[in-house]
Amino acid sequence: MHLSAQSFTQACREGGRQIETWLRVVDREHGARFYREAAAALRSWQAAEDVVQEAMVKVWQRCASFRSTGDPIAWIHQIVRHTLLDALRQRAVQAPREEALHDDDGQLTHEAEAAVLGLSVQGVATPEGALAEHQVEAVFRRCFEQFAAVHPEHATVLRWVVEDGLDNAAIEGLLERSPGATREFISQCRKKARPFFAAWYTLVGPTGGTP
Image (cartoon, rainbow, N blue to C red; front, side):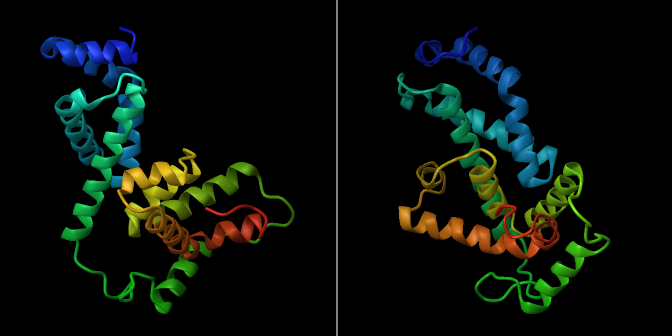
């Protein structure tokens, strides 16, 4: 089956077995990408499976609102991301507040930031000359994992911006915030990330990039 806007619109209109078959093809061809993205944010394959399954139910329920001029896979991916953000926010509500790590504004306390910086640079020698690219990438991945463990929603949004290239308008739609509030949220993502990337900054220097 060709996953076109026309075939999706037809499947939505006919419902039943047609839409079920269409979504099975989506799962086979694109499901792995959806699961990996959710698992990276939630740090759990089981939780990722629940998110993607919930998103597919929403697709089934909302398919009548799809506009035939759009890309159905992009539309479905957006629903997956909305569902993932909801899951991350629900976790944040349920999790006990980490008083020792954060101040009233949600920023790392000076003591916690110092501890994070110490963790980040522990065991990482200052390179003489250029470090092998795979070593720099390994440090970046470790820093990002530490960041995501403490700020999963902010890390997920930052990944969408940096890795997937989503612009502010796309993030605005996912967060369901105003343009100004979206810009502020992305700025907060970067601010929260900086302490965790101390080791990476040490390796790449001031011109190496900004997470």
